[in-house]
Amino acid sequence: MNKLLSGLVLIAAIAFAASPIFSTGFSGFTADQFPVPQENPPVQPAGYAFAIWGLIYLWLIAGAAFGLIKRGDDPDWQPMRLPLLVSLGVGITWIPVANLSPVAATVLIWLMLGSALFSLFKVGDTDRWWQLSPVAVYAGWLTAASSVSIGLLLGGYGYLNGTLSALVGLGIALAIAMVVQYRLHRAPLYGVTVIWALVGVIVANWQPFNVAVAGLAGVGIFAILALRGTDTE
Image 1 (cartoon, rainbow, N blue to C red):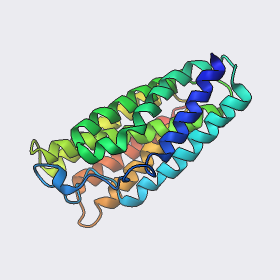
Image 2: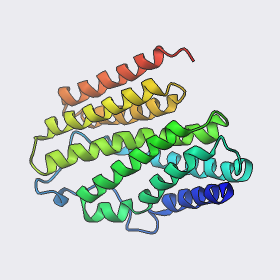
Image 3: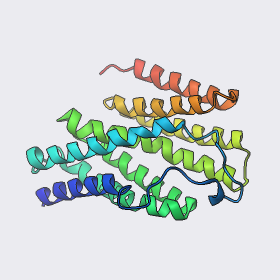
Image 4: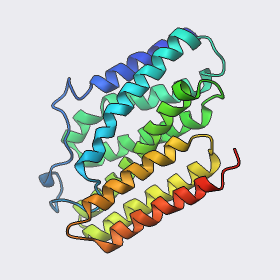
């Protein structure tokens, strides 16, 4: 059974990475997918930041392959596999859904985040770079992406203006990130990945400069770094 689950995780990781190829792809929600068109929403990081998906895909596949080949029956790996499989399984369907409905896509990405964080907390103590690190980076980016989705919905459906929507979205991301990083000091790449997204938000809001959104992102970066500075491990 352990070997079967580890094999399923590898298959899901490969399918997840291949999903952009076997769908129409996804370059972000289009402005006309919302009642209030979202042109350059301040909550969204600059385009270059999304290149991190290449690293995430490759690292998840590499970690899953190592887990199957070298640690297929290792009980230290077993607890994190099922929630990771759930997250990846939902992720396989995300792009087609996102091209149809931002609301449904937001529900799915929060399911992906929840199961990814559950997996991260279940990660064992061995093989840090193969077991812990890929899940940490994946969960870190999902923390940012799921909160961006909330900001887009708030602005896109007219509940708040662009800046306030961005502040709410970033606030949610920072609240989650601070709690997770505080409770899981052994996963520094989680916080580093959230910082990557926050830097992307600052770049996106540089010209014209949005002091509120860029400022909150900057505060978030320093808060995560300060939290990392308290580590004793």
